[in-house]
Length: 138
Length: 317
Image 1: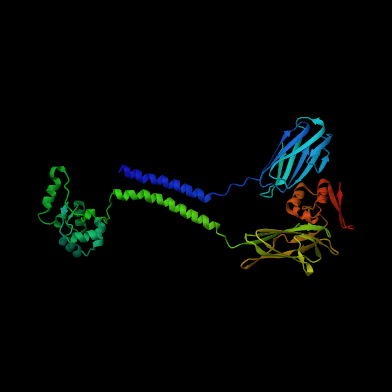
Image 2: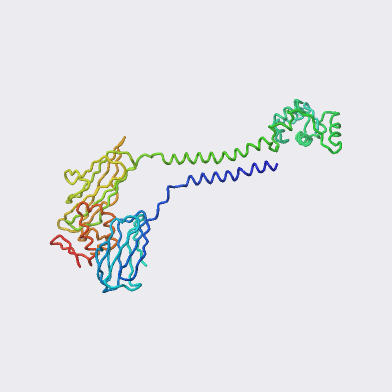
């Protein structure tokens, strides 16, 4: 009788296991698409050279606006890539069709910037929802 | 065990007008067993069943027994407190596989249970895979066409229109897109190049599979009144084994107003969101000569102003 009981119980959990596998196979979907996320940080936020690194997720937005705020009176000497506008304490980039991955914006100033003197705002449309996103750095 | 009289059982049952099925149900055996008892083919039955049978027939058990045998059976049952194995054959009612009374499953029956339990999930898996295959079976193809159009444009100013066709059909098919421009509106350029018929009828013909996008630039004139609304309409036709035609849905109305088409909220300036929409929705029109740089100048500046005499915008620094 004990053998019989074991024989009857074992298939229950086996059945449950098989059912779990079957359910998993039913709900399984192709590899999850990564969110179209944008993150950013300053690799260098003081001194003469300021480096802003932006991570562009997949799918990438159609375009990105980056506005870097600097102390009024700071003199921009060089910027890569070239901004659309600079002056009055703001440097503006409009980056068309950014590729997923890392995007680096480098700016060089005539005089060193003190810590905390620089900040940035990134604006784009969420490629999945079309909602306007605003990312503040730091 | 007791030995019952078959003719006696039949006689009592028929006298009470009972069926074999009724007796079988009451005693907990099959009708075949009752039949064998009545034919005296297996007259030795369990005392417990005998008591149930007697009750059903409304008599005492002793009235069912074969005379002279009952006492002997009872004595043998009681000898030494040991149960006495009745030499009954395989046709004995108690060993009848069809008996209705609960029977402890034998080793053979138990050995099938694990197999059955194992088979259920396997069958489930097969059904799951079948359903998966069903979901991947190509459905009748669908055809959708959406027009993206600014809500307004200034008179005489170029604005972009995008038509996106989604054909749920990976096979190459003949595709015809038809677009009717509103009166007093003209085509400036298009990509791919449109076949233009009389009275603002535009056509694009191709052999395409999957998604298709058509973009064109147009310009509308007004007469006396500036605020005029114009309507766009069109359809898309796909031919594979059969024709399928769909109307182009999405935006179809455009107002002629003294605001730039990219200035969606008509506040005479181009915001961050508006300039992003220009690139996201109409960036493809840049290849047609859409002056995106001028829109960016408006975005970078403090605003713009419409000059009705010149039919042009002035960018404010």
